[in-house]
Length: 160
Ligand code: IDP
Ligand code: MG
Image 1 (cartoon, rainbow, N blue to C red):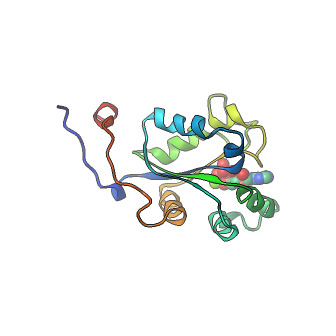
Image 2: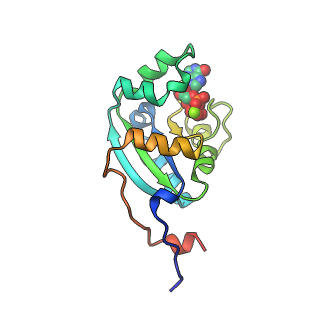
């Protein structure tokens, strides 16, 4: 057997990825999850969740002075979102590439936003912008015990 690297989850980079209410309403949940799955990242947390207003405000607190902030909070709380914790070396930057530019019209074809969206205000998915924010956002959106510890049988075929 190929020896595998066993690393405690807390030592490995994680990104908070969220399918926004438009992605859920448009039936894009499977499509979006499959892009991260096929890439080879590890799914550690997953739930469908109606986000309360105060949580949306806390998540986007760095944008609270932007003119679009109230609309952003309405958008994120307008229906259920899919909350995910994805893990792997380099997952934060790689997920940002898979997601594409904030404005879907500027996002490259092949990215989630480039393929599946047309407007910044309806850009279907969120991804953490740094490993520290990945950790912070996963702690914000998931309760104790909701993020699972497990290892994929694919690990030795993804990581040498
Ligand atoms: P990101 O999601 O690509 O990291 P941020 O600049 O962090 O982009 O903005 C967070 C979210 O706020 C965006 O994904 C988008 O939903 C929304 N947003 C950002 N800029 C605008 C804007 O100019 N108009 C409307 N919504 C915006
Ligand atoms: Mg951001």
